[in-house]
Length: 354
Figure 1 (cartoon, rainbow, N blue to C red):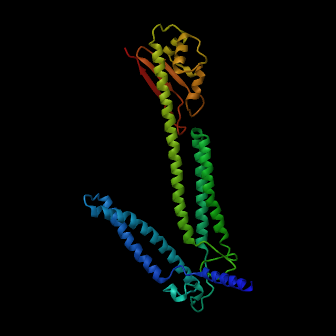
Figure 2: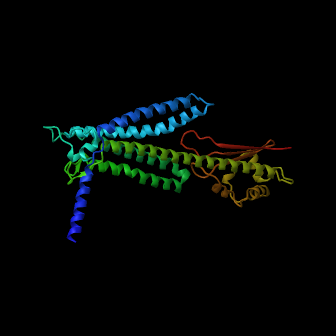
Figure 3: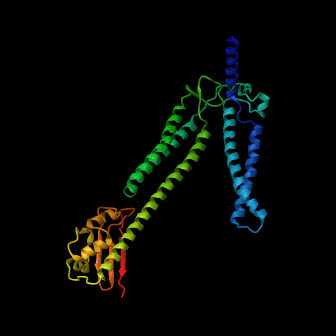
């Protein structure tokens, strides 16, 4: 049992030593630099071939494909790692380490890297940490301002769906506020250390470059999600607007059919009102033969049921109908609109056929 405990202690001791691996050395930086330059050249070649619309040759098409996708992906990967490598080397210099040429020369352990004489306690300015806090807090604030504007504008169109999407976005956007608070706490040097400090008693803070890169990637994802939400809302708006327009066509054709039916009573009160022009949305139960026939064509028993068949921006639908010898004119005065500016009514006309 004692031997087993001793072996476990030895393994734990070795694993704790492995936590101070050297992330980047001069050789790795040179490889990343060359890879970034070459991949950038390949990517630009692919972009040029694509913009020039060079076609007809399989070789040219292959160069375009490899340059744009392979070169672009490799450039992004190598460039981000090169940025992280430069920042890491800068921290090594700030803490007085000699920059290792090869990790293997020091057993890939930062503890074995010698320090420059006379420089063991550097003055580290926490500007990068403040930039991270400001960046994440600003995105958190702007994202929630956008959320408020979204629900104010789109709740009347999407209703419960808009609330559901808002909750999803609030849950996602809370990441920015939590991250800003986390980066703020990591500025405490008594509890957190940089990744080049040898001190197992403190937690390792997230490197500034990692926080910036992660933030930019997540910012792009957030913008994409919010753009898709707006596009979905606009699609729903157009669908409901088309739905209302189709219902106006139905009303115009039903009134036209009833008007041209045999034995229609042109002296009835409802017929006379439509001849002068009236809002049938203000009617209740049909009280004469012509209004009952129109209601039968519309499939309703009360004209107040029209309120449930239309979407409006304010109040009940205002549906105006006017009949003449030429045909039927139908208009909706308060259709859906995305703002409170100029309001254009929906119109539909049913021409009489002789």
